Amino acid sequence: MLKIADKTFSSRLLLGTGKYPSFETQKEAVRVSEAEILTFAVRRMNIFEPSQPNFLEQLDLSKYTLLPNTAGAKTAEEAVRIAKLAKASGLCDMVKVEIIGCGRSLLPDPVETLRATEMLLEEGFIVLPYTSDDVVLARRLCEMGVHAIMPGASPIGSGRGILNPLNLSFIIDQSTVPVIIDAGIGSPKDAAYAMELGADAVLLNTAVSEARDPVKMALAMKLAIEAGQLGYEAGRMPKRDYAIASSPMEGLLPN
Image (cartoon, rainbow, N blue to C red; front, top):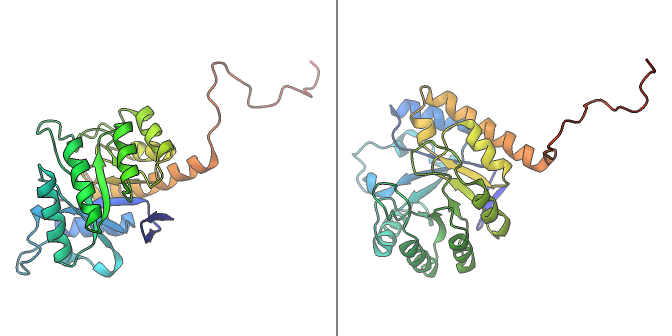
């Protein structure tokens, strides 16, 4: 089970809700993924205007936990304001802190992320900060009392997969809260690898929404995450420089 603060989930796949070709495709992808946490950008939704269509209308919200994110914020103050807006709408007191510091790479601003995290923790939010794969930054956020760490595998929407597995493994090893690999996942192979490194969960969006068949890809990601988790728990065989026969050499019949 995945435990974030006082919330418990069976699925270790967190699914984004942007850029799907249609509401129906989005709804079916969410269904087959069996994701229990859905994330969305508050600034891209008119959450106070019921006449405006949005994905929330397509879903039975009693089955999901919504994770609003602060995408679009450039400062800690903007991020806090967006988080409070989402909370005031009655959606959730859990928030993904996302403050972009570079418009080209879309990498997060570490200073503003630390500031926003501290402010939101003081306000009583369940805080999940999106970060780069900076090992020291992840440790500082953990020490501040965040409820999960969300390091990126590679730049948002790039589909490049895990670029720095060593840093991610350091973050996972030192973390006292769940580590959710976020951003850059492109294929089921990437999702499985993230879980094999010891991650607690994976958050993705574009890998599903921009797939040729988003519904099939959502199912593939679900299965990959389950396989990666089982593989991590089972413990892989050691890597060796030389071959070792699969069958024992002792007790062979004489020539």
